[in-house]
Image 1 (cartoon, rainbow, N blue to C red):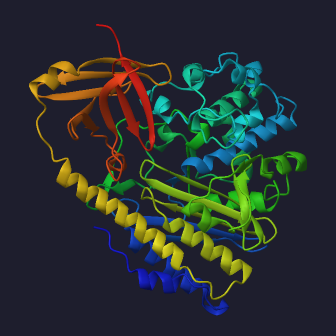
Image 2 (tube, rainbow, N blue to C red; image 1 turned 30 degrees about the vertical axis):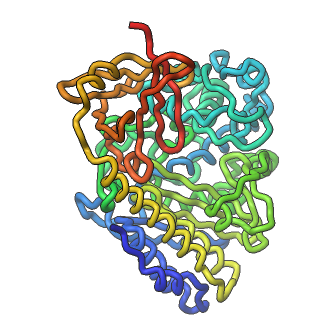
Image 3 (cartoon, rainbow, N blue to C red; image 1 turned 120 degrees about the vertical axis):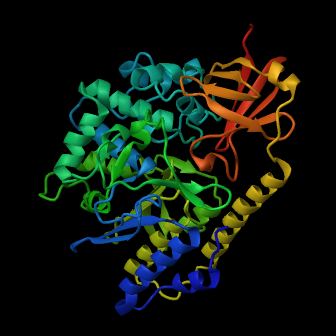
Length: 502
């Protein structure tokens, strides 16, 4: 069980006197890590005109215990999206793309279920998360070997969950499509554009593109997640690496400081060279989609009465009356956060090797408050948010152990459930019998063991324990549109599959 010293955490999260800021921030970071059992973290703080403040804590991996340093690479997940926005802007500056170019003009194999959306969707729509399609992570999750144009072609079954351009509909798939548009327009891969046109001129030599680039690298943070009892280390036999423009970069604190400096300098490299034009830079950071939903995380990140939204690769909003651009990244055992304030000339990036951390928000706010000179600000609400989330995790895990204890499948279930199940949006799930157990093969992935979860559901025993707690990945067998089928759910998303005729 993760235990939290909430009183101490709350005291540490008040603003500190100027002479004690560095030490107080250091203490805050360590206590946030202890509160969430984060094995290792790295923080980069950039203030305009000053040398970067780089901090590192803990170990890269519980299994090896090597220390984190300023050059340890962490997966930054969705923080990658701003890199995709920059290479798209560079293509626009060169006249190879337009923000309002139709996707189908550049990618003839692009389609979604709604023909009208297919015909009208633009690069701007992809980057601003306003296509209205379902998020669709099950598609790329189920097909780890399908990428690039093949993955684009597989999107044609994605239905709408909201009206086209009517609101915010976050999608890793649409950012992957944006990266593929850049590749088609420039004649070279998205990966090459990022390496040559962003990482190299900014001196981001530590940053790696794609999971395959990690091979042979020693200074890399491992993956950790809560398994229902404690935080543990894990590895993936088959990394989910087919949506790289949405989340495929691995970066160090040193490099993230250089990335923040680029934004604070309004698109300029350290030598003064512009990587994007002033017009394109302005377009990237302009709010494109207003977000009307506001939950506890949004309330902690933005002012209560101010609008927030999404630009290109950045969430936008107001914090303490100042414009802030920010993004969270997470998944596969990591948690990251980046934020910067244009008028204050300050930015912060936090990377942790523990999935689902809320502490990165506490660190963000502490750094921004320090830069703004805010004092005596009570952070009880973060301590409450953290306590509520951890209590939810623990209760769900405890309840699951009581009500869904492992049991053998019945002979009737072992006979009735095996078969192939198909979804127009997400592909095929193959259920197979192996002795007294069942396995599920999601698309072209490897077979995954299943275990009973209640009377009519099976839990997928995935490598990443985050898919087990607090909301497990499940298959439920039931009718779908009048025929035998199943529903697969994971990470708050679900898809219906019909059983194929035998």
